[in-house]
Image (cartoon, rainbow, N blue to C red; front, side, top):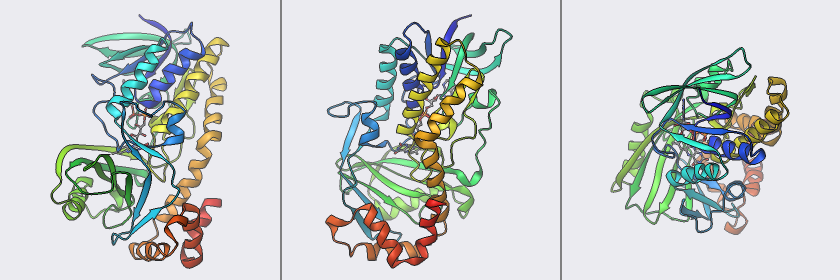
Length: 391
Ligand SMILES: Cc1cc2nc3c(=O)[nH]c(=O)nc-3n(C[C@H](O)[C@H](O)[C@H](O)COP(=O)(O)OP(=O)(O)OC[C@H]3O[C@@H](n4cnc5c(N)ncnc54)[C@H](O)[C@@H]3O)c2cc1C
């Protein structure tokens, strides 16, 4: 039975960063990173957009082969296609997740963690010796790993959280179903991401165009199934694309779920922490979770190393991980979640009106802050939306 100190389940951004930081914090520890798929980073279920500042905490995008595109503009589109180009929105990047996730896993390996692909955790139980015994299916064989700490970084469909007795259920209204094509031969500004909000196009969510190259983009949408008229995400996407890019060549397709909720109430148990999507650490307003997953992974990895070195892997000790996360981003997500709820009540006609009046602000001064203030002055019906941010 392999005996390890930290077993990380899932080699997405959360898991790879957790493994790397656990090892870097205490070189003497045995850290193993498991990935059930045959290749880290594949298949891609993501639009691949990240902000510069968050990404730079973990990797340098300049000249990196895991970057597809540098983004300088953000364009909001109203339901009637009125465009609002934001000024000063900051730099962003569209990643190549296949390469990016592999890069993060390689960094974990370089720091001394062992990375295993085609290795799926299938169950775990707490043993009398105070360790977790984790069953792993690897190349058709069943192995049992004995470990001091398990880090569950196994994404939206997490099982580690459930096996550890944590409540990882998601209310149906907070689960977005997404569908996305890679479209080629389409016309758009390749330096901008486009976000279109409309209950007719993507009820409860939004539609996006994230450029991968000139003429090539991830084009997708996320919606809340409860709010639809019975059609699924792909049918909504097909209808949108038929109108916007009827001649685009569909060269890739993916579906996936995004949990637009808040962090689960408890992200730890004796000898266990869950991180990233597995703990619902996605920004509930934007649906972005890559940088959040890496930040949570870093906290989990460091907390694991410190706990093992101190000889105390109890849930009392690991609660520090949850507290640190809540201070870092978890509390902010509670506020974003309230805004998301309030925005759900804004209808398409109001969005159209808002876009037209916002465009009266001179382009160079059209920052997010000014748009926000303008919206409240010119459209007082939005004041309750803003108010939810503060209550
Ligand atoms: C359509 C779509 C578009 C998105 N667009 C964006 C975007 O533009 N920007 C952004 O920031 N976020 C985006 N997201 C969200 C983002 O993809 C996730 O938040 C991010 O990948 C979370 O990282 P993670 O490490 O927590 O989980 P994941 O990246 O899901 O990684 C989990 C890993 O665990 C593995 N695994 C699962 N179970 C087991 C097991 N039992 N044993 C071993 N391995 C296991 C999986 O194979 C997977 O590799 C999008 C999501 C979707 C679905």
